[in-house]
Image (cartoon, rainbow, N blue to C red; front, side, top):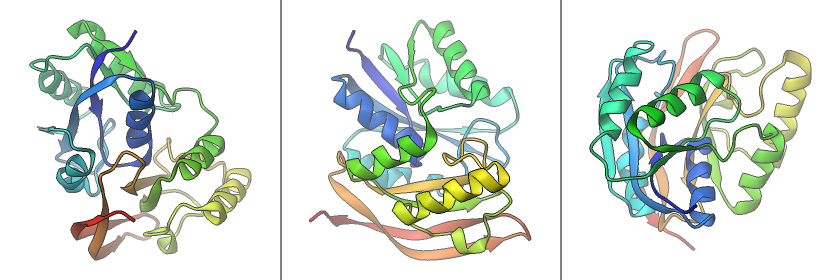
Length: 226
């Protein structure tokens, strides 16, 4: 059944690819919904570079619904529910792959609001999924790392075939989830097949804290594609 949807989107690869799959399935994507956590350790929501969602919504050509959240476990779910409540939609699409915590809570919120919950990436094999993203023309960089084997040199790295090979090695050596679903890394999509323009980072700042860190895109602009 085709539906009018809101897409939970952070600008990262999983939520953005889920939007692309929903569109390809024929759903009507009406809104992008972005939660802005007040703390870095939010259990549910993406933190670094969430401010770039204004540019990404322009790339996609959809209105952006932004809502602030405390980032406090469980309480942030109420914030998401209130952001979705006034929207005239039939369902919500999210990019959960293996996080039962994330998916179960989005499912519950949707059930309480009488909406369908779509998770087109759920249960997919991580490396195969990344290969699909690359084949589809997604341009993705890594913007945060927090796992053994992922050092400061990974910040700003483009996810390409060589990167996938290195992630495969880290999976075997340290148990790193290649999708980053366990919080091992964060990502930012600079271009996708359904983007009207691509995001061009202009000002970058690396924040490193001994064994983890972020790449903050302080300034960016949109560029024509092709």
